[in-house]
Image (tube, rainbow, N blue to C red):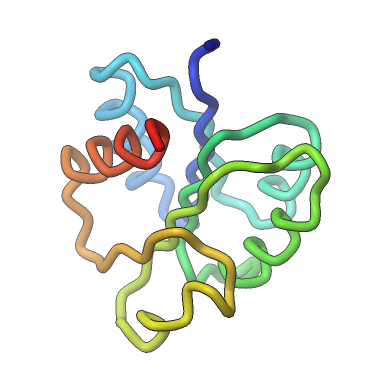
Length: 120
């Protein structure tokens, strides 16, 4: 099996850079995007095995992104949604994400969670 492809979307660029360093340390390459529309283009062009997305971004909602990603023929992967509050904790089936993670993020734990999801 080829290396898994992972995309992380967040409007906070410093979080993306930090996450990328943690993922790369574990030999898990990470594509990043800080823009909703750019992220959608990446999803359309690439076959990601895992998408990690912030729930609320100025350029678009993580919930909308999930809905659009799930409709792409080339996306059959898992989705982790990152949020600052747990209002949607029980809505995984309704919104289509596989796992909800609360902020603040612990990046080492996020990498391990990503590996666990990718191995299923």
